[in-house]
Image 1 (cartoon, one colour):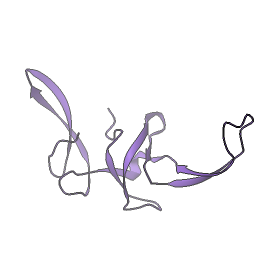
Image 2 (image 1 turned 180 degrees about the vertical axis):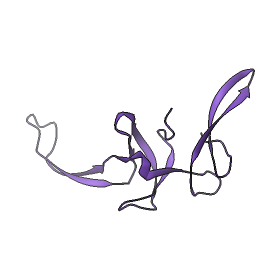
Image 3 (image 1 turned 90 degrees about the vertical axis):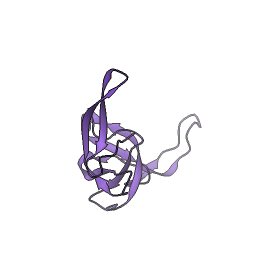
Image 4 (image 1 turned 120 degrees about the vertical axis):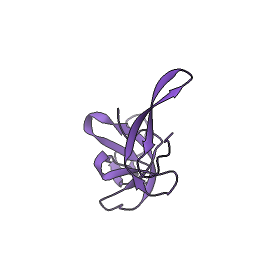
Length: 108
């Protein structure tokens, strides 16, 4: 089970975008990478499509960064924290729940 999931608010720990926060757009578990909104922006030079479908030019988008370079933001303090798991009893069923190690608050 991945500790970082889509739509989590994360903070970058290292690199050119250190300290910035953003929402996870995509998780790539096979490569241990995540795509974060507004983080690691790169420019790609695209050739125009043959049938006029795509316009050529310079397109700016987010590139994946390694999952170890980001940490989930604690919902209580707004600072990066580690993620833990605990099992909670809900309506007679046992559920695995993610929580912030710093504050103990449950992560969505």
